[in-house]
Length: 104
Image (cartoon, rainbow, N blue to C red; front, side, top):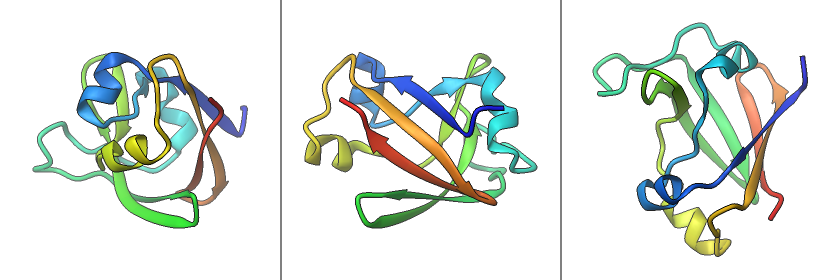
């Protein structure tokens, strides 16, 4: 299995401050349990490292076909001036630890 997943920012990603992955990517996260969409049942905690900061969140089932971190990335999107079509890479760096980078 590849140690990273790439995702492309869509208008919905930018509007909602979210990073989405295909639900078929769930095994990549290998975290035990996904959180529900509402937040009533959080998933297994993970850490996402980006630009020297660490974000604690869980991975949630966003819809029937999408999963992603529950935390909002809206502030980070503004800081990096994220644009529709930009590619982000999430690399597994440890047990429940990931590195997020903007590939442009």
